[in-house]
Image (tube, rainbow, N blue to C red; front, side, top):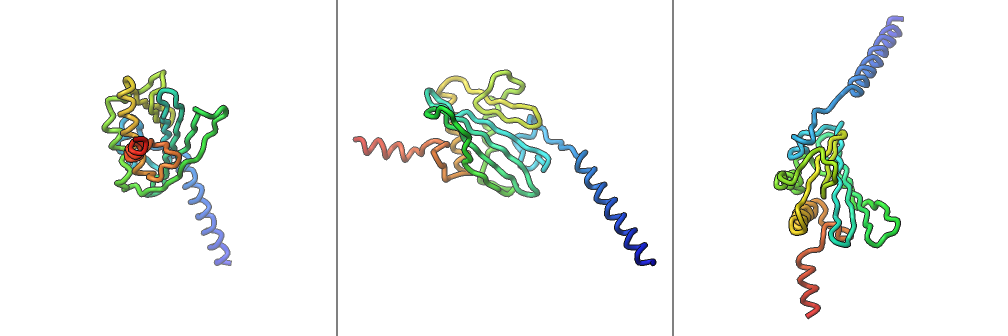
Length: 189
């Protein structure tokens, strides 16, 4: 009889602990702030945070858009990227380009350094859309360029940063390599 009472008592304690843990996770809140923590998001975001990035690849007559979702799980960062090429498609659809998982301590993908280098292009609460938009919990940060030369430099910096994460560069969403341009020019001579 004592063992049954002990088992029932332990079962009730386990159920009670489980309910308490579930209640804590429901009310848990992240302190991550996209405006102040963006340049150190790998360390400051929690498993409760999702960062969404939208990058407009459009230049002149070319139309393309990339969207990225960044989440955190324990000590790793998950990056999911989709791309929609709109120039030659009447009904463009989002295409998964890659899904990668990197350690929180990764030193290859230096996107935070990219954000630091381009801090002067950052504006918050804009009604217009910038070339790059980052959102977290309804708060948006936009990056704007000034003219075609500035846009091309900004895109080149972004492409170089993203190629470190995704060197496969399927469909050349991060631009063509300089070597490819030089080879093409040499072949045409």
